[in-house]
Length: 209
Ligand code: GAR
Image 1: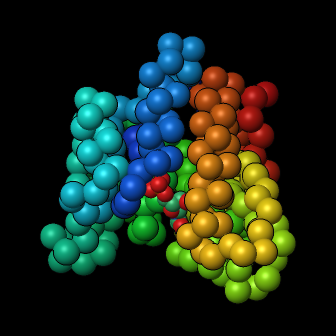
Image 2: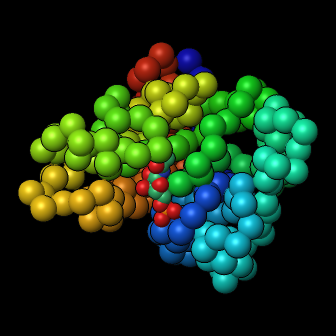
């Protein structure tokens, strides 16, 4: 059973593709002495995003690895892994990173790469969790933090938080409420994982011993 324990503070590399509000929540938490993790670098698959600006304002190292700068997806995947490895992370956090990791990345960081998804897995995997939940007509959706595997939002679940769907919700309004709950879950759960360690056995993730 893979077990992870970290010397405090744990080193986080956060990857994103957009506004980076989950990243900001981690940056804010990690600025508190008692939080057991620090963001040591922020990476993106495109330049010019607010997530990178948030990192720069916080004085955190950033990097960009664009798919189009590589001959194929596998070369991009290896380059991304190399960039992340330079920062010697204990945990890699995919927070709104809109790319799937390939085998070359997962060979290095599987088991300690987490992703946050705006739906209650296993429902509504993919890029449009809030819209798919609305289209299906569920009354409760939410967010899921999971350990990344080779599938699309399929990895072992670390934490989930429910969010009620309101009658007049559109996808944007629902996603904003999900993100509020998601950020709190992410900060709390990553903090506990950093402090207490965690183990993964099959689909079961346990924080602490
Ligand atoms: C978050 O809700 C995250 O779960 C979602 O993108 C948002 C990023 O927000 N990710 C996915 O949909 C991946 N399948 P942020 O950039 O403000 O943190």
